[in-house]
Length: 354
Image (tube, rainbow, N blue to C red; front, side):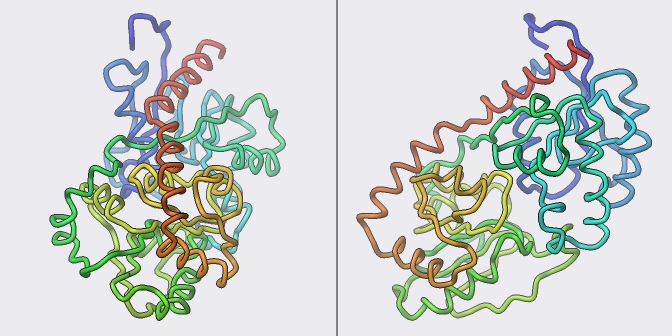
């Protein structure tokens, strides 16, 4: 706590940090890092593996006891239903907007838990105006109870990481030549199947040294398993990429493709823009709002638009020279320090008001 902070008691639910590093874990980890040394809170996590039903059971039964009368911040789409003195970060409403994308158990729990949690907590933090609209559509909570605080971009995502190209390629066993990069899980909403099909249709028209590289975990908790994908020529699936190599993997890409059908925010497109890479993205929801004119937007359900976008960003130097500086400028507006400061302010003001 800084010397200017009023005395408050806040507990942060960090159960999610026991899972592999994905977007929501990066959100929590980045805020904790950027408030270290002056955060007016303590953290709580189970002493065992917190994934699956055991983690949910700890969150619903043990965490309220640990929190006592403190304000509880649950930062990753979940929290104890019996603890109303709570701020919850809801990143998106995908389980309710698109239940067909969810595994049975995951979808059953979140479709019942999320609306009730949103209605019972004292305040909601979300990451985009799109997610705010979807929360309101499903819960009808008072709009004044929702604070929109965008994510940030880590300073290590920068064009300067191009100098790590050789070491990164050796560590990840990348093919020689240039590459289009896509980063994300194989969840259906990430739209990897259509990206691969568009690549299959365009592959013969693209430069012979160009590859499509997919980085991200195979399995995911929403689908409950791997997607059955067919990989065309000159594609490589890396699976999970160690965090130390992500900045260089971004910075040395020729194009970044992120044509998800649904996102609450879309952090990977900002990380790519901050790395000096032109971005192909979706014209739907939060991705369209976030990218604006700094990214090349396509209909994520239209194979011809996806394929045309890939070819344009690979070959059109005039377009690339316009998008790269626009992307760098846009990404510079989003920092984890701003996100952390705004989140900290919401938590302190809520603790004092309740």
